Length: 157
Image 1 (cartoon, rainbow, N blue to C red):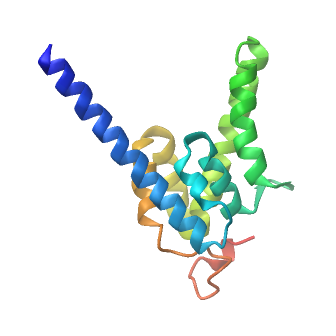
Image 2 (image 1 turned 90 degrees about the vertical axis):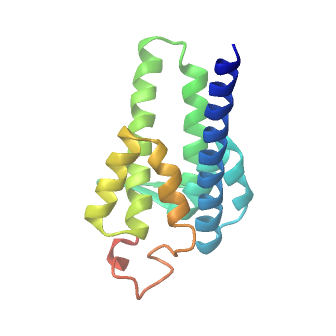
Image 3 (image 1 turned 120 degrees about the vertical axis):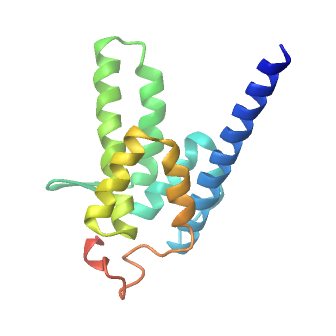
């Protein structure tokens, strides 16, 4: 019984550390991007608001989704609300998944070169724990649209 308690304590401690790494990383990225309400990085479902502020828009082929700071958190809530509708909920879940994949790629592309952004996106999908470390690593950097001397400034929108 004591071993189980110890294992749960370790799991909770690791989860807390990963959460804080991601939150502080997003907070720093949001501050450097000139965003408002960056403290939302510490509120789990609303941290996507900060991601949306950094992105400013989401480009999907020829289409541009404005206000990603509203779309990203709203899509999470819509997905949880409609998840009980069978096939409709599953289709919505798949759409939201692809929206987040595109958003993460575009977020990483603001801070890294295209090939590295692809790698980071793939890692974020298959090894989600890595996302906390990536965000924390990028917390002191500026997005490409803020720093014109960046080698990857051409990826800015």
